[in-house]
Structure formats: C-alpha cells, structure tokens
Image (cartoon, rainbow, N blue to C red):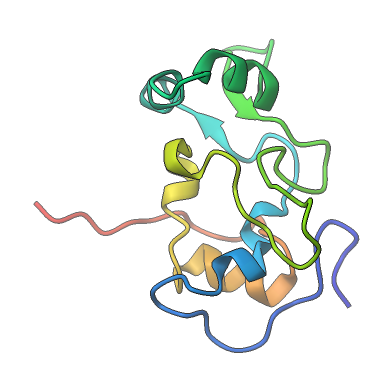
Amino acid sequence: MAEALGLEPVEGPPDPDGADCVKCGRCCHHGPSTVHLLDVDEERVLSRPGGEALLARLTILDDRPPGWRFVRNTGHRCAALDVSTPGLYPCSLYDVRPDDCRIVEPGSPACLEARRLGHLGTSVRFTRERAF
C-alpha cells in the first residue's frame, strides 16, 4: 500500500522514451521543499510568456538562508502537476521545468524509486552522467 503522500506503486519498467510518464506522475508526488530552482531555472521560467506570473503562482521563496526558491508543494504533489484529467499527470511548466525535474529521466534511479513507492522517496541519489 502506498503512503498517503503519493499514488499506488506502478509495476514494471517505464517506457525508455517517456511515453508513459504522463500516465505515471509518481515523480511529481513528493514532500515540500523537494524541487528547488537555481538561477538558470528562474531565467528559463521568466523567458516564457507570462513567466513572472507563473513563477509567482508556482514557487515560493524559503525565508531561511540561503533563500532557496522551491516549487510549491503542500505535502502531496508538485503545484505544477496538472491533475484536472483523472489518470493523467502532465506538468504545467514542462517546457521550462527546473533542472531538478530534468534529471528524473525514464529509468533513472529517481524514476524507478518513485514508481516502486508511488511517490518520490528520499533515498534517491540524483545523478546524471555527463559527457565531456
């Protein structure tokens, strides 16, 4: 049984090309202060038409040093997750999503953990191999 934080776990491997991501959405179910925005992420959001309003609506500044900006989350799911269609979980800012979200690729450790738990857990190392 999945914790109240997320959804029921999903069995089996994800489609490597991400075809089932919008039907899954488990990586977007996590606790508050999980997805933070760096300067480059804020710039990306602000480059989108209506970016300032989007940033104001979907993010919050932590008043504790160092003053991180996080995607809003009241404890169950990311505020950018569009849950208006039952069974689908598209991201409302996918084209300008933060780097924290960009590293959760299909089949990555974070993806597999979220599918296994029904939500993004805390035991995942966020790593991405870099090509130099």
